[in-house]
Length: 336
Image 1 (cartoon, rainbow, N blue to C red):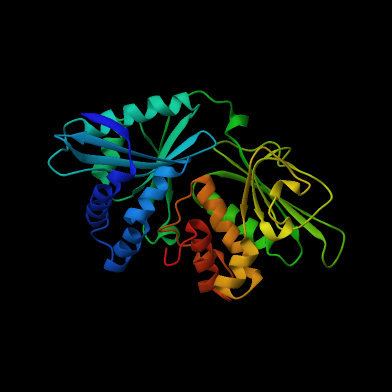
Image 2 (cartoon, rainbow, N blue to C red):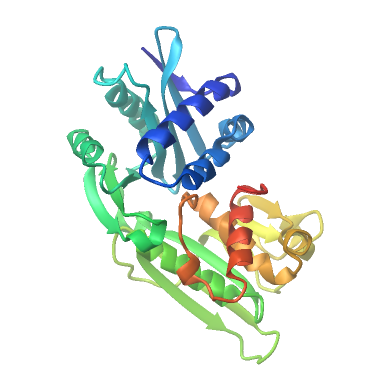
């Protein structure tokens, strides 16, 4: 048995196994649900994941063929398993245990302290199997969130102080840019997924055109300090004279031209996206910048939105366009 990271040449076979997984796990769902899931894992889409530093795609080779795979996402020392699958005929042979053992050794080297996944709540056989592998049951997520009940399961694999488990997101923009809607929606999603969440909004004194900022913190444990000193992720929709320290930056290129770091922001890494151009080109108005940004944030922090039902969290007006903008920001692909 060989366990290794997937290569681009493996993607056609993984694509086939992914289809088998979705047909098996979601056999009780409507065909359109299964097709929507499969559309996110085309051969080209899987090749992109192979190149993404946050994505981890592993395969198990046995009898000279790929018989299993695992896809997950690493953010802030937490690894979220999106999918894990073993081909029929190779189950009960220790494939999953060996795969997870291999994964955990590599994650510990990356200072990861927690592995989690979200399982179909009625899939008792898998949940019982997971408990034998050391996973514990977390929050039960209501049907309204995904369209069916989902169970969070998790396993701590390393030591970490509660303060180091906090993930911080800073959002800065002007009144009228939808910062409040973006931050409230994101906070609601994270809370429904079982996190402790703190959201602190700060408004400028100006009635129109004033600066509004949001400090959003989420963690496994209660949050003592709601103010962010340095953000893990910074979203900045407007020019300000003040800089803010951040480890990673998502910024609208219209603010700073081609060099995002020339804005008055201190960051260890700049990631630049043309949010305004996409909002106008794809959705007809710059007001959808905030929803595109929400999709980018969710992807970056490892929240899998492919079955996420957030319609009830959004205002009824233009809800379909808002959801389309979130999905576009998540994948930067049409029909994702």
